[in-house]
Image 1: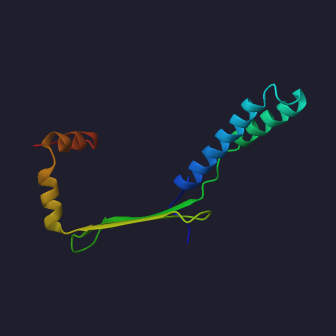
Image 2 (image 1 turned 90 degrees about the vertical axis):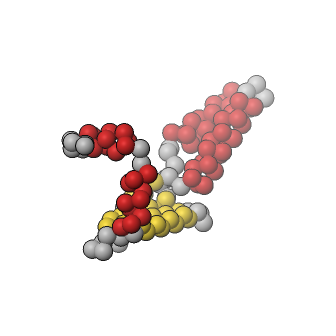
Length: 122
């Protein structure tokens, strides 16, 4: 089964950014303290790391829809294949809850959405 989407894991991305920052900090701190050749190697290493974008290790899967009884459901799952990050979210609304939700929405919001869809509003 294939994933609906692969994206950046927030935990892994934060670690990647921290590593990138540390490499450039090390390069700045090395300036004038190491030989020219070594400094350029440190700087090149930081630039090479930064140029290689982090991997998209977060798998996202979701199901969204309405069943024959009028129940609306959203089921979202994500997990990283490099760390222990995971997030799951599931909500189901009955037909009555859908009517109540729609009634609570500002009328102009519904009108704007309908216009974007090319539908007339009352």
